[in-house]
Amino acid sequence: MEELIAKRYLKAIKQRSSGEAMQEIALIFSILSEAFNDKKFIQIINNPDVSRDQKSEILLAAVKSAGYKDVENLIKLLAEHNRIDIIPALAEVMRKDIAKTNKVYNGIVYSDSVVDSKVIKDLGNGLGSKFNSKISLKFVKDNFNGIKVDVEDLGVEISFSKARINSQMIEHIIKAI
Image 1 (tube, one colour):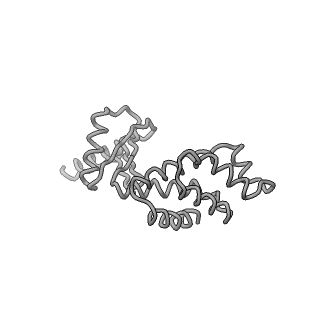
Image 2 (cartoon, rainbow, N blue to C red; image 1 turned 60 degrees about the vertical axis):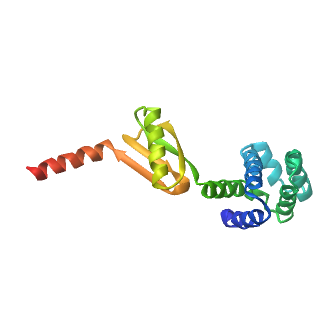
Image 3 (spheres, helix red, strand yellow; image 1 turned 60 degrees about the horizontal axis):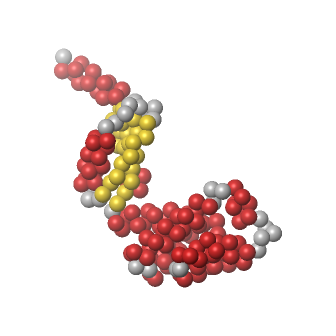
């Protein structure tokens, strides 16, 4: 539900902003969304004794130095409609939209054994050419027996399981005999 509401706000922001401004606004909201990981901040935002105006002032103080009147107006609007809670969803929707617009994506390579950085770079370049995008991959050691590549924003997950490859090789050998 939050994502649907956030997409409406994103649409309005995109109509008023250039691509460069959109990236800066997304960065501002990304930083704001990190505050929602702080328990004390959440207590203040969810406290019924703190008025909408006070919540708005807290957020406005955080973004004042950025100098974007549109961001300040959006925060006031979110506070007025009691929708401050959608700021993390709005930041995520903005990030995904910018990635889609610029065709620049990040992904993760999972494996139980260390994968060489050149292999990771080659995987990223290969996937990037396949999807006409720039894909940056990073390695995360995991208990997956093989290699799994996940580019969430593109909806792509590719896995090469050692056990599956071994069983397919055995099947092929048995069929050949």
